[in-house]
Image (cartoon, rainbow, N blue to C red; front, side, top):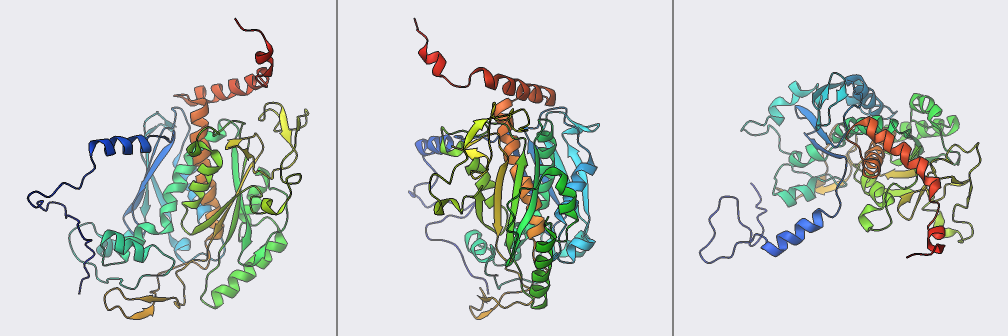
Length: 448
């Protein structure tokens, strides 16, 4: 039995229109308006991923990288290895290796200004070739019991699909491996202008790190050595206990990752349009990660409970010992309540964002109620190989998305067809910040 999802008034591809029936395409004016809307904001560093979780490979194309950026396969592999970290991951992380091939845009270890293409092969492809083959045929098993909390049912209805695997394979968080590959390139580029990004886990299940001190780059090896990528040993132990308890019951856990970016100069993003605000761009990027349900910039969740006199970061002149003084044009702040972003622009302070991940909806002991889309009978969702938690790995993906946003905005601000030009423009910008601290002096001068 196959349900029909064809909506009223729709027309199939290749189906002739009824005589006198108006074409349902957009009119010329509508096309122009749509084009204007979509071109309102252009990413300077763009990436596009393709591939399914159990397909032959994932592919990512990154466009906008300047020439001269040093890149090796080992750089990409190190980033992907960090994505596999974390206590509570499923068996796939233990035996699946990421086989990376640099397909285009890199010659003799450096970018050449053209789009970069990267392939990440699926080492399990031989097991899945018959089920996921692109050749004409039929699957051996059709999944008709969509999982609550996943894209399954909405995707099946939207695209007129009868098999949940047609949705879940692309909706899977395996796609983030391609993002991490792209984000590694963005991190390498940001490193040319002194920007470093790290993440750590501040909550896993009910276990939360209540400390307020931001980790620094030298803490990253210790974070990555932690079973749950948590810097505090006491909190780490409580997090591991939470994972063990959930695993014993066949359940799953969510949590929160905090991302910190150091060395970001003042002025990335803009206040002049809604779609150019840096905090909005970061929020969209982090929310795009599978299973993320909330994003916080700085102390955004706590600020509504404070008075205005307590909620903001006071400005003072930087002293020689202040490492971020140059980044802020000679000014600095002693607190980071705004997360290093005010009015949609970076301030020169560390950028701090948190991403909250819901518990995974695929359970090792299926218990979530659903409906079989063919029989319409109530049942429980099917079991797909899964993790108890993916929060530690999510932090690495959050670094990736933060890097892609910051690299794009840095390219918008500084430009440059080569890495040398990009870095030179950034240095010139910082050097000129003190020359025009405000427009007040020029306004007071007489004009012809």
